[in-house]
Amino acid sequence: MMSALTRRVALLVAAVVVPLLVMFGGGPATAATPAGTVAPAAVGDGSPTDPNIAYVGRWDTTSSTLYVPSWTGAYLQTAFTGRTLRIRQRDAVNMYVRIDGGADVFFAGVRGTVNLTPQPLAAGTHRLRVSYRSGDTVFQGVLFAPGAGTAAPTVPTRLVEFVGDSITAGFSDTKLALSAYGWVLGEKLGVRHTQIARSGYCLVAQTGCVGQSTQFFQLGSTGTTAWNFARYQASAVVINLGTNDIGHGVTGAQFRAAYTTFLRDIRARYPSAVLFVMETFKRRYLAETRAAVAARNSAGDPNVRFVNTEGWLTVGADYTDTDGHPNDAGHVKVANRLAPIIAPAIGVPVPAGRTGR
Image (cartoon, rainbow, N blue to C red; front, side, top):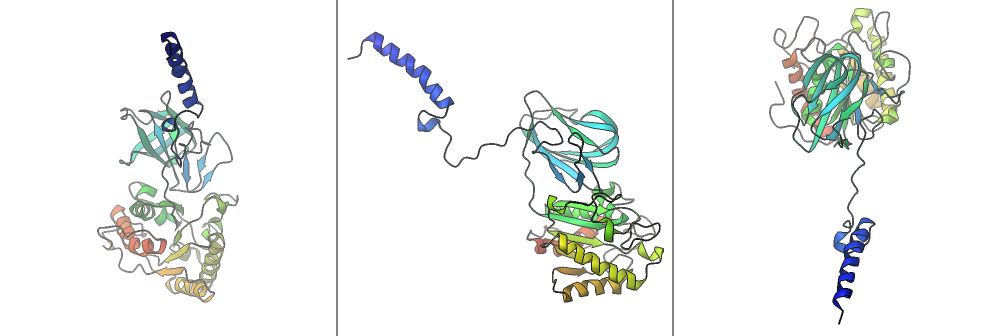
């Protein structure tokens, strides 16, 4: 039999030793981490280099203290804890901010440390997406309440890249890139999406018109820094080019040859992507566009596909001008038409609801 003193000593030792064993990985099996449990990702600090921040599209990450999106429609996303969040901007910028899947809130001409949560959020983990519209589009990190930080976001595995000119960039619609058919379709399909597009661009480089047949392979919409295609691989590439070339004297033969080579060069960078080549809404270089697709098919590439867009948009209803720029409703129509074409090719469900006009 144990004396009263001995029992008190034994209880005291157990009270001290068992918690220590649990703290350092020992102790009873019920206190240990269950087998197969994955340790949570480290809490991030919100700096541009934070691994919990996912950058979609082409970003210039040369500087570790500021990251810059290089084409329209690029965005960043992350998850974060805490009830408040601020973002650091170098100078005046216009941007869209989406928290927890809500509406994109427009911040106009903001600079410095910008409060993104004027109304504090509920406690818990939240989702953030930031896309820049114009101005000094330089991301310098996010700031949290004490004790909070970033967490790894859920990022779709598939990515669709949209290549074009002002139409693909969303010129003259209400939210520019965010109202354009590429962004609308990407959101509809639940995939990552990028818009490698800029107003006034051609397929074939000419005086006064940058050619996407060469600029597409660069980091930015200007400059000659080559893009590192190892940064991400597209599941599909949707190309809408040729609207502007006719105004710069590009012949049919030049256009066909340049398009054929362009498709070949994209394939070299994206070996597994399905390439969709859209008929321009004004039907410019239609025969030449078809011929370029046929040439690649004949060369043994069946995953280059022509997209007939006749009848998709109505003059007087779906455009903002006579130059062929769709309005918001027109972009939605294009996205709805593309959805049943793109979705099965990349293995995602066709969205429910209207997929035609």
